[in-house]
Image (cartoon, rainbow, N blue to C red; front, side, top):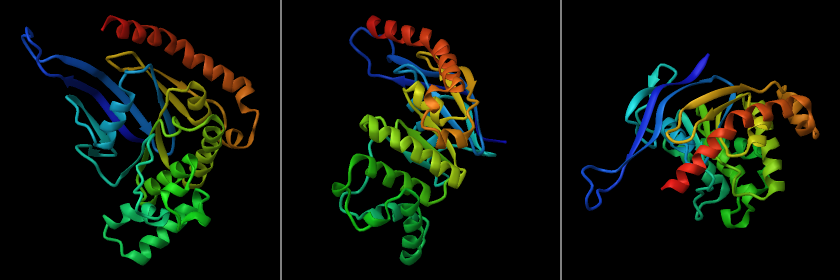
Length: 272
């Protein structure tokens, strides 16, 4: 069953006129994007730099508008932000003056939930991400990986239908990134949350995703979908999963589809 359905989505960025221009300068970021995200799956979105991955996620989140097509969450057309979607960005976006407990509980206040119940719910999700002993700390007292776990807990606390993650581990060191990848798989197993995960890393996409949507260079559209055959339990438990035949096969499929788009994106950059 599809939770998110995008049909013919188009996005154009319009810049300021320059002397001698007859019209506003336009950049078509997305063109005819058609994509379905199934309920309960992790779908990874990969593509070359500047292809519109984050733009598409922002549209799903309701943080950006679009110039054509339609996008639905269930049977509801997306026209703006909503508590049915939780968002985790690369930057942690935590409130430095609030404790971890109050950061996680923050979104619940908008739902009119009273303080005692907010804190009960927040503590449950803090426990889920393994930070029970840190609920009274402040963001500056935490490592980068711990801050991102707080951001994930906050996004999950108000029970969104889908979790939207935009390069959430991109700013972390390699060891922390790998640890949080497996943490996310554990959280997914416990919550069965639908996740749209934007990443530049093919290996990360193969490790985490049930399906991988590959985007073309700008203007971005969906070029191919790769099904990842790795059982989720094996991903979670097997330290050697990256050397398995299924992992390497999926990685090769993604790179074969992506290689030409990366070259085209580089040519576009050099031609500007």
